[in-house]
Picture: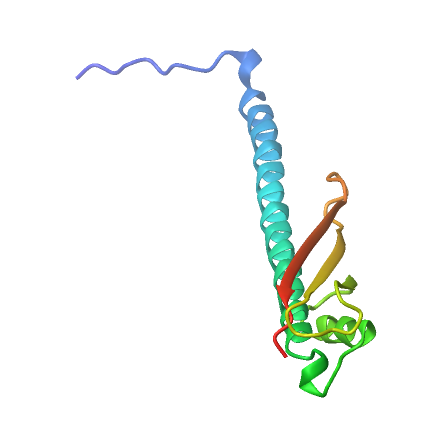
Length: 134
């Protein structure tokens, strides 16, 4: 039975594996953090969009014939209860009398601030338009 000689690594490669691991792990962590921020941004945009629709629905069922006419402040307060963070709500009425058949527009604005300061802040805006029913 013959023994094969042991092959030793070249002395200049002792720290190469550690250095490669450091570079790859940094890239992997940045990619993972970026994906998490993207997912969080999509979730927040979806929440802002949903809040705009909810505010618009609330406005269209509280028109002139409903007997419970809502003001811009009341619609803004309602939207704030439907979303877990502070947003800016703008309500625009096509008809000042708020009669059925006229259009109401609710716009919700939010400044998305990523957790990781490497990424810039992004303004998120969603607008919903509906016809007053009552």
